[in-house]
Image (cartoon, rainbow, N blue to C red):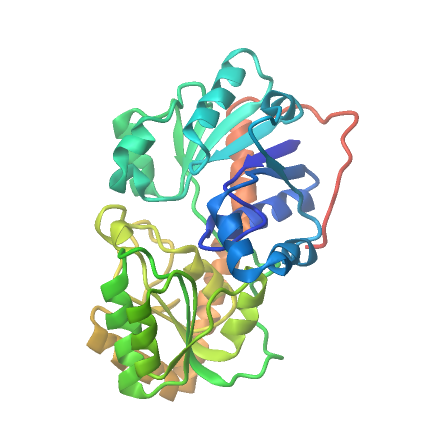
Length: 377
């Protein structure tokens, strides 16, 4: 099958976590013998910020790190209808311009011979409800939401004809343990500031515990305001800015523990949805301690795959436990890795997507002109 993914960006992962998951799913589909490419807007904010902040070499990294993946840019003159007619399955991310979301749906309604899927991986359904409510999804065959709470929100609001849950996951072709890397740090956190959605939590569950314990700690991420940078410096935490997602496994490998700090809208309004970094960290075999969130869907085994800390003081205690008990650290790392490999890889999600396509009764026959591209798994 030919898959076409409309994404905010595949090339840039600057403050854009969906790029992580989409790259992994596309690689899984390619490995399974399908074709997949992405379309992204030429002037998307993630791509523009990456170019402005890191320069052209950062954009060039994409082709070097993911030589099997293809992303084309589109502008106002792009012929979307022609692109749609070449696809069997079209997946449209929720950051796509609303006018384009509607345009793609109209082409499907007029007889487009492809399955049209809408994909939501954000909290705007609760934090910016009018924006999602205003999307024209009537002509979409399927809506995929990345957690049951979000799926329920779509169903109750009547957004889309059919809604299913499709969780994020780790691309284990990229995210894996790297024992060959020298470990020279204690704590690493890889996450963006979050526009006030977890500012207090970053202070309580990262900065204050690292300061109390005197840890050799590193933070990667973007959009940190001056007061946050000053607080990191005062706590002795090294701030290293944006990191290409392909370099994240090595960053985890250089440290002994990481933390998970979810954004407040997920904790309060959309329980059961962790950040994608949690999947990726566990896939790298690093012990993880999480700030509070409700694993309402039983994705993990809290206390076995990772530890919860219910307060900043408890985070300090849990970090001390992991950093002073090698057996505990090794057990957490092994169990978290095992759960990812058993349930939460992009190969699992690609298989789920294919099953949902088949359930729609639209699994097309192979095209005679299809050039099958495969990648090593």
